[in-house]
Length: 292
Image 1 (cartoon, helix red, strand yellow):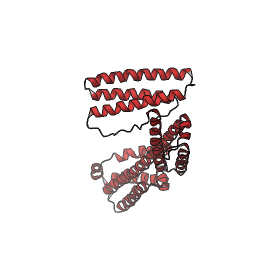
Image 2 (cartoon, rainbow, N blue to C red; image 1 turned 60 degrees about the horizontal axis):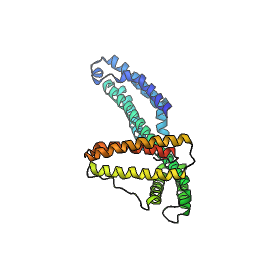
Image 3 (spheres, one colour; image 1 turned 90 degrees about the horizontal axis):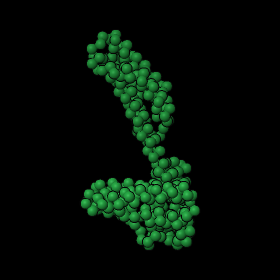
Image 4 (spheres, one colour; image 1 turned 180 degrees about the vertical axis):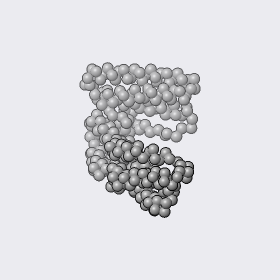
C-alpha cells in the first residue's frame, strides 16, 4: 500500500508544476504556449492512466466508489483529447486538471477503505486477546458455570464463528460476535466478585453524573484487579512491583479526584479519575488481562 501511494505521489510531483498553471495562464498565453503546456500535461495524464500503479490498483479493487471516480477521470481525459483536436486549449487544460484531481480523489477513497479495514482487523485481534486472557484467568469459574448466556463451551463456539468470519476478511461481523462475548464475559466476571452485574448508562445529564459513572467504572477495575491478583499469585516479582507502582499512582489520582469532587469541580475530577483508571488498566495488563 505504501509503495503504491508513494509511486502516485512521485507522478504527481512531476505533474504539479503544470497543475499550478491557472486558468488565467491558459486564457492569456499565446496559442503556441498554451498548446505546448496542455499537450505536456495531457501526455502526463496519459502516462498516469496507462502506467500508474495507483490506477491499476483502483481498477483491480472491489471499491465501487473509487472505480466510479476513475471512470470520471477516463471521460475527462477523452474530452481533453477532443478539445485539443478542436484547438480549445484553455478548456482542455482545465479538463486535464480535473482528470488528475479525480484520480487523486479515487485514490483517497481506496486508502480510506483500506484504513477502515485495518482498524476492524486490529479491533478483532484486540478482542481476541482480551477474551482469551479472561478465559485463561477465569477458566475454572466459566467451566463450572451452567448459564446459557456465558460458559466455556459457548465462548469457544462463538470464538470459532468469529475466526471463520475473519478468514474471509469479514472483520465487521467477526467483531460483532466478539463484542457480545466480551460484554457477557465482563458481566460474568463482575458477578463473580459481588454477585451483580455492573452496567452503566453513558448518557449523562451533567458532569456530576458522569463523575459518578467514572467512580463506578474505577471501582469495577479495582474489583477485577483484586480477582486477578488472587488468580495470578505466582507472577514474577518484577510484575508485582510494576502492579504496585500502577496501583499507587492510581490511588493518588483517585484521592485527588475525590477532593475535586468535594469542591464540585466535577469536570476536573473526571479527568483525574480517567487518569487513575488508565493506571489500573496498566496494572491489569501486567497481570495478564488485556483490557481494550
